[in-house]
Length: 110
Image (cartoon, rainbow, N blue to C red):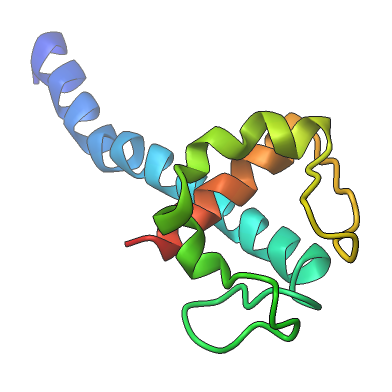
């Protein structure tokens, strides 16, 4: 086999791995976001695709995208999200956690 053909064949063999990389990273990010939502938010909010929020005033996460663009929540999640009602505690996430939570919220808006 010629070297150029061997290199091309090797590159083609790696193609599925390279294409799967970003999808797997996205899946991991979404899973982390779901874990963060369940750990920090589920006592008040419905964080899944179905169900009512345990706290009636807390909007289900699957409806947040209808209220505003969830991708705009990054800064608020990192700096400390505050709302107009006193029962919601202030949350601060590191930037990676904020991105993961937003990635999860985007999956609920589909």
